[in-house]
Image 1 (cartoon, rainbow, N blue to C red):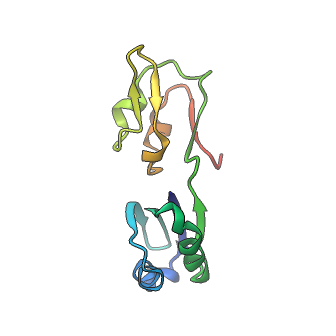
Image 2: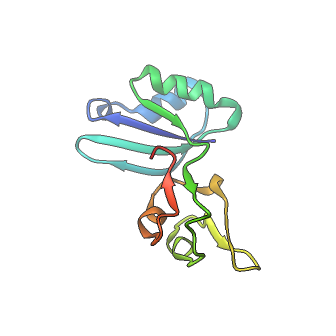
Length: 129
């Protein structure tokens, strides 16, 4: 399962990921990371059976943790099958089926939000919106 970690500049001074890996023994895969001078957001992939343990370890270190069971929401009534999302998604969440409709594999999503920005009809949004 993918989880989103959000943390402040204060926490960025610590080896957050390394500490959690050492504490839990769980290997984490970083799918996407954004860190600037004031805030950080990382999407990591965690084995399903260890999500609670890993999330608790991050929370103890002052990190906001959100499970990404539904990273984006797709409004079929707004979609016109234009394929903008298909063409811009870096991890191939979207693809055309044989009947030229779009299928979505949300397990691949890394919440880069490129599809949301590119959708001309507003058929995509984050689950938080």
